[in-house]
Image (cartoon, rainbow, N blue to C red):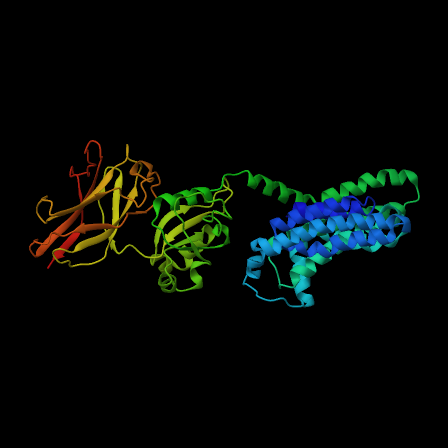
Length: 489
């Protein structure tokens, strides 16, 4: 959008001298509008500049110029008709333009709103943007006036003012709504810096001094912008680094049961196929763009939210200042902040703690807890539960988990359920390669025999290879782990 907006403004400047360039300016603006509707705020300038050029032309040339403009207008009318009558442009809500709360209506902006939006765009330029002010102030000097083409500067200024005024109708905006304005202000800064140099050069009467002053002034400007240059290079390097939000998307898609999540702005597009390019099979809706402490955890749970993606900095802060809050949840996966990655670091929590702790290990897999929906249970009912594991390392090939209801002192199988351990088959035990990760199983439903005598039994679990039946062994040589006791009434 910014690219085509700047192209349209540049073609407007060209069109003031070569009338045919206006047609390309209108086409560039149409492309900018397709990318983001805010570019429509330049429409008055797109229409006004050709009219101004016609008025400045000799009388004998005006009829031909009017006919050409009418031809371009038919294209513009067709485009606007398609945009507003056929495409869903009018379905877009103003809230989608906003960085914050949705706003439903227009309002004449207060001066402080306009100034805030201008500062948002100008602040992105660092410490250089102020140079446009003295440079523009000196444009009235004869030496500068001869070097600066006033109509082009007027088009650039009107484009910036039009964008600033149009977006300010919707209140204060976040920078992503003002990127094009920032680029226009950057261009004005360039004009201002040029005016500064020209003014200082005009004050020098000695030709030899002028010859050395021009490169000296340019060097000073370069030195003055080194801070911004370093920041720009660092940002460019940051774009080349791998981003673990791709890994996070794969992790969610293959490892977690479907449920809504909350996150901060860094992950608001991670699972959106239209905005973030997510290509997973499972869809995880974002319930809200929020931090975990903005509501009690009970309120998030009541709304159906199951996961929270916390930025790494917040996780580290909560560990120091709000450990009880973290204890109400289960840490599933962590991506610590690391300069080798572009992402800022994040952690994934399930908004519920593990109901019951457990212990034991078979092979490289450790049982760390379980959730049990009901206890005691009656004959003929189903025992529903989840298991939690951690892995010291991946297994040599995929293993299946078995869960048996057995006597307290025996291995007789009274009820069983076998399955792949996680909700998705694409995350077998041979991929469990993060020792700090906690894996929550699929929902197991173990049928209790209808003729089972009341009493106490035990729930045991273990892993085996589907092809060979080979089981993982515990350090004591057993091929199973005790989960808990079950009472049947």
